[in-house]
Length: 107
Length: 322
Image (cartoon, rainbow over all chains, first blue to last red; front, side, top):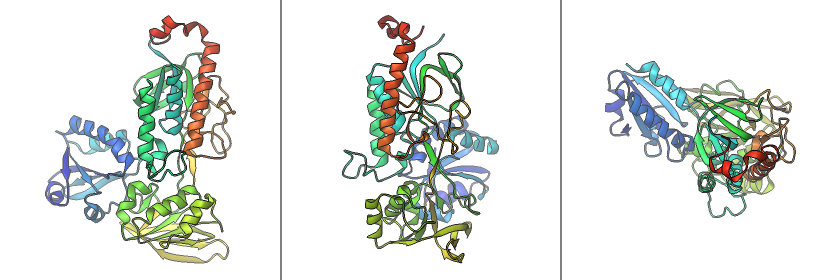
């Protein structure tokens, strides 16, 4: 799963054709960290069908805020650089919800 | 028939982990089933100053991680699975999972509680865009910004103090004219220059453009409505029990909390409740742990009384009921 940050976000997400899923997480976000192994598992399972990235907001706070992300965990799907769908909050971001999001946008 | 556990514990917070520790220390075959993050609500609070022995910046996540390690060290199995329901009709009880099922002689239901929503317009729309229920998760984003904290209990005032480490200004909005939080916490908050309080006031709307820009507040004494600019809104207006999977199977009070006696027994024999999910006056890590211990000990007594024949050493060696 690709790590995106302030240096490569534009290239890997905003300028990428087609859908990209970004997992916004933080070092102090326990729900995010609990979810991470599941997200990695999903990335392995669906990685060839949907581009999936993760963004450490603790190290890229301004970038996250520029994407209007002020709460974790948040998953956003970008399509041709435009955000098309997102889910946010510990109760909403279940492995099932993330998988459903992947299935909705994978090729 | 497949494996039958002595006790299946639903929920991996302080109550469930303590129940696991006590059950496995008593040589019971115990499994804890947790669907989300281990440690429950306690794992999302930074300050854990009121748990005896936890001094010098013991963070919630750290203490909870130790609780899990400790339970596992004595043999408790920790499973990450989603419980969908139960069947209590037989003496051996069934826990239905999204994938498969688990059988156990006794059940300890320790799913806890979750934050309640404020119910104001804009709240859901700005979730993750300035509206938060988890200060440790999201405080970072509000470095040098202004935030509003809604509520007046321990959680609201404690998290307001935590937020001052990041935010420039923290305004607590409370609908009453005094806090319900413990006096020492309130004192700390009152001495903090970054914290101010707006009393007798409710937030009626959260607004913004893509991200939160402010709230509309109403003074409930004089009806005056004011506009308050802020970058973030942290909601701590109480909790509600997590009981979807057990609703209708055990007795609950009008608010949906499970009714259990001093021995943590619910209305169904062999089914115990522990922690924030049950009717009680104080919902803290320490009372959750106590509940878990009591539930485990009484589950053991229940099993000894009702399943005597299968607690023979031989059967035990095989991993329970055969």
